[in-house]
Length: 53
Image (cartoon, rainbow, N blue to C red):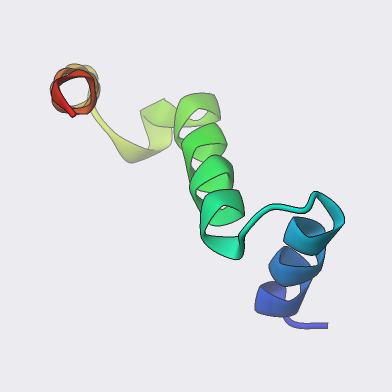
């Protein structure tokens, strides 16, 4: 089974649109592994921009 199929199935199981499930998954990944993705300064800038929206 492809990753896309797995994500689609999990979203269906949760009665969630696939785009929402994808956003939740990416948010969780970013919060759980921030040091791998962003510097501390970048994280602060991202948080500030998110709060503006």
